[in-house]
Every structure is written in structure tokens, then in C-alpha cells.
Image 1 (cartoon, rainbow, N blue to C red):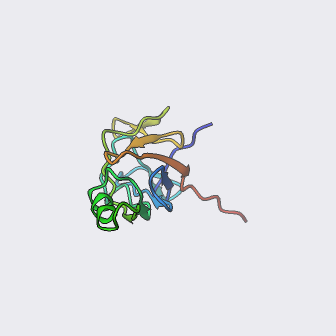
Image 2 (image 1 turned 90 degrees about the horizontal axis):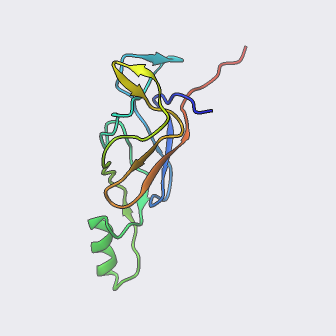
Length: 125
């Protein structure tokens, strides 16, 4: 079952070489962390980079690869979200569907961003 995603959620991209994080900006808190909605797609605000990018659709990767005579040369990830998150959703947050762990987001550089961890933490006593 999909869970709501909060600040600290972990993402991966099919063209990224490491994981990135999500940052929510809503005033709705889940477990003390801001919840995300399907519209939270701003690069470097909501969607943090996934390490190095290996997509030739990324101009920095294409340029570095050309300079290396065709040897794929990954460059720092610059997320370029195309659209909104697609997911089963959670209850509305400020009139917008909440982001859930089954969400996917397309990057204009060709990758698919998925959620690996909701960011929710349980506290044991």
C-alpha cells in the first residue's frame, strides 16, 4: 500500500547514479515533516539532484561526452521535471492530491524519477 511522502523522502532516477531527496513546502505535517503533493516538482526546491547524470539528453553530459571523443562522461544531475507526479495519491493537501510512494515523475532529460522511501520515520519507545 502506498504511503504519503514527506520531506526527507528518497528518490532515484533511471539516469542518476545516486539517490536524491524530496523537500515538501506545505504547512501540512505528517510525523513532524512537511507533506508533499503531486505538484511539488520544482528542481532544487522540491526535487533534489540524483548525484551524477548519465543521460545524453542532458546538455552537460552530451558536451562532456563529445569532448571525451564519445566516451560517456556523467555530469552533475540537474533535475528538469516535466509535468506533475503521477501516483495513486493520498488525501488532499491544500486542495491538491498528496504525493504517495508509488509516484513517478518524468525528467525532461529522459529519466524516470521514482520514490524509494517515504521519508516517514517511526519513533520507538
